[in-house]
Image 1: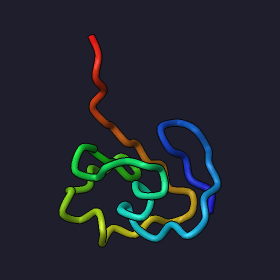
Image 2 (image 1 turned 45 degrees about the horizontal axis):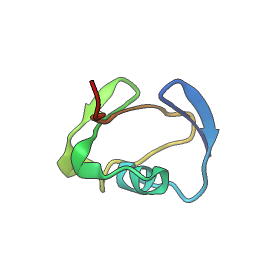
Image 3 (image 1 turned 135 degrees about the horizontal axis):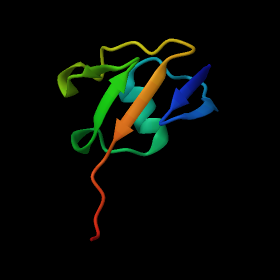
Image 4 (image 1 turned 180 degrees about the horizontal axis):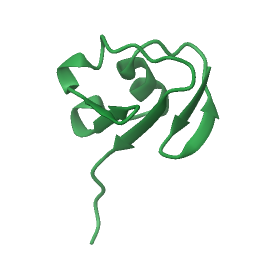
Length: 66
């Protein structure tokens, strides 16, 4: 399915939920904020929020450094 993730179009397979997406992309879901189509998704809803083809997803993760 084709998605836009942080402004970049990507084609990914076997993505059903926000949790699946984060796992496939290598994120630790406890340390990220996610918005799907400009709507923030609660961390407790990651495993239940369905991803649809064409969704626009923003993933914000903390970064170390200064």
